[in-house]
Image 1 (spheres, rainbow, N blue to C red):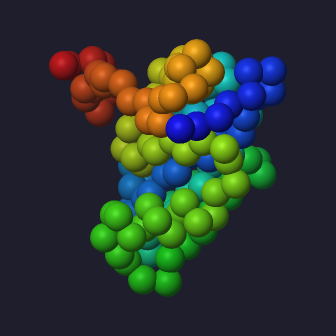
Image 2: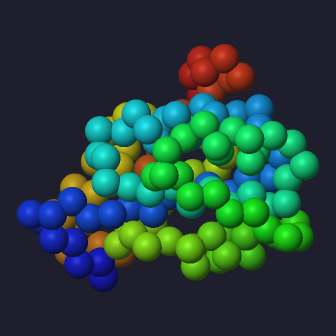
Length: 136
């Protein structure tokens, strides 16, 4: 059970795990900055990339917290390591090659507020091509 204060906007820790995902990473991060729900932090866990992941992360403000793993690990281990850095009341996960619609967080927080016994919320997804066109 997740207890959410309906009068206060709880902090959401958004976990992004990235391994050499520079091609789409900026689009993923930008989709977070476009959210209508604004009380969040990004925990960007760089899973020992050798691309421009770190350089891309430096283009954002302090809401994005960058961490680099010393070794490459499987996704589950990387997620656990990233979660350890989170300080939010809620967790959200965004893969570095995905994007969110602008009201995603706001709608999901509402689900928690309306249903205090809910412990997890997920949603359907649109499949898009490399140009952002919905294909499925």
